[in-house]
View 1 (tube, helix red, strand yellow):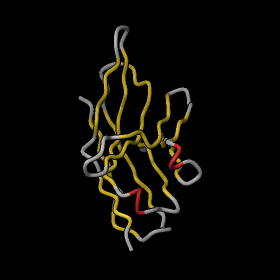
View 2 (tube, helix red, strand yellow):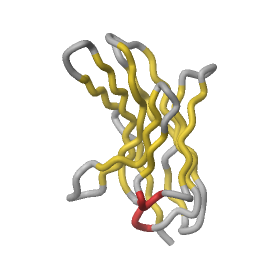
View 3 (cartoon, helix red, strand yellow):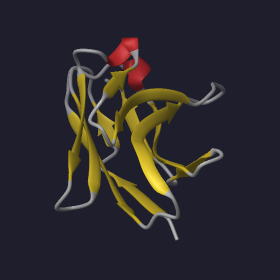
Length: 119
């Protein structure tokens, strides 16, 4: 059973930093990537950052230079260090685990953690 648990969200002022953590356990097929997505009210869920098992990293343009995704193998976690936070970063942040068998991909989501950036 795949389990993803996010933590670290909160209310911060513009310009502040925050670190999110996603502890993941279990897999059914081969994990190919772990990522962070976010969804603001009334908007679609979009990629924030993703890291593949090979170490390739992608960031959304809006967060490049401000956010850093990393893996902690000892803690089985995927972390998202967020800096210089802006009001437009306000959203629910979700962790996603992508797996693949010989035919298709599978996506598993955590329940999310709320990040609010407001003065």
